[in-house]
Length: 138
Image 1 (cartoon, one colour):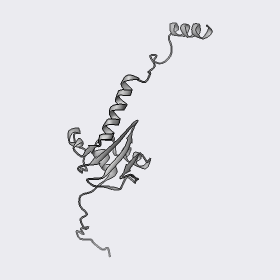
Image 2 (cartoon, one colour; image 1 turned 60 degrees about the vertical axis):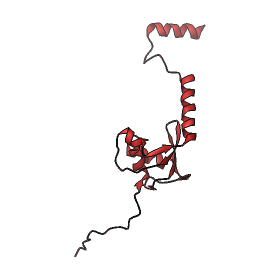
Image 3 (cartoon, rainbow, N blue to C red; image 1 turned 90 degrees about the vertical axis):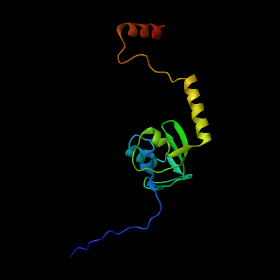
Image 4 (cartoon, rainbow, N blue to C red; image 1 turned 180 degrees about the vertical axis):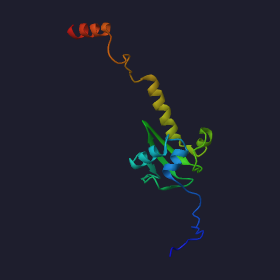
């Protein structure tokens, strides 16, 4: 005989959301699986401690993360389990002054010294090949 459970309610712990879900909802990562991989890879720290993707986030928590080349530090202001438009997502966190300064410095460096991109696409043309041979042979 199977035991049926009736609406068993867990005691309320206040509103909390999983870390990977919050990072996705706040639009730091494009997919939830990317957010999970970043947390598992040690790219996200909560209050200075490496945590797992299922760790709970609550308002007031400090998150340090690396998204690509950028290092960001934010303080959780609100919680949302659903991905909302970008203006609403920005209201979920407040970026620290140090993080804003660091991002501005990185943007200035990228502007002053852009990474070189190859002008050629694919296989060199006959003219390009002849120029390469002349350059190589002197």
